Amino acid sequence: MKAEALMNERHVLFERLFVEIVIWRVPVPLPSSGHTFKYRLAFVVDGACVRRYDNEVGKGDHRHIDDKEESYAFTTYDALLTDFWSDVEAWRSR
Image 1 (cartoon, rainbow, N blue to C red):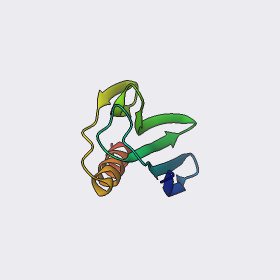
Image 2: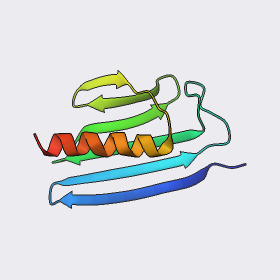
Image 3: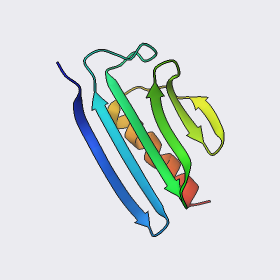
């Protein structure tokens, strides 16, 4: 099985804000993740990424909140999207 693109979207939320979501289903889990998804979800404001969820070899599932990086407990595809959009909305409502 080859990697399968599940989502590749850009959502312009306002003139200076956008979200980019890229999610793949991969044939085998990445060495540092226990699931078969490879993902990158980013919220960008004025050219700076203020929220990002991703998983990469060596780091596993994690998220970036402004300048901080912390572990992210991936559970499901749907929960990933919900958690990310919740963080975006929390940033926008502050």
